[in-house]
Image (cartoon, rainbow, N blue to C red; front, side, top):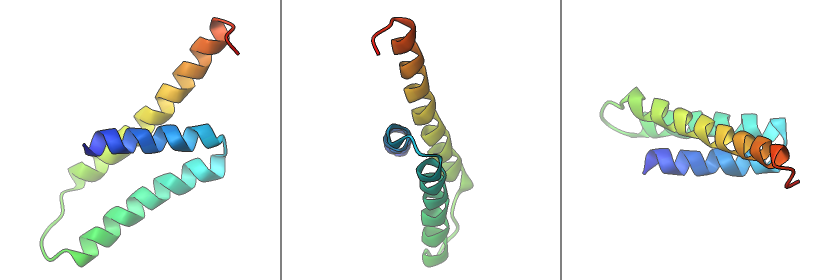
Length: 76
């Protein structure tokens, strides 16, 4: 579920086509993880942060591949 949510965040940020928004969403993912780690009483696993960042990059990659494929097929 985490990977799917992060992928959708990456796709949403990519459709804005702004480098600032792409960087800001990535920063907000890390900030939300850090905030949750500070508030929680126990330890937090960094693997979930890695999954979120991988999913975010996967979403960006999906949009890039989709745009390149559409251009190659002359759809846009």
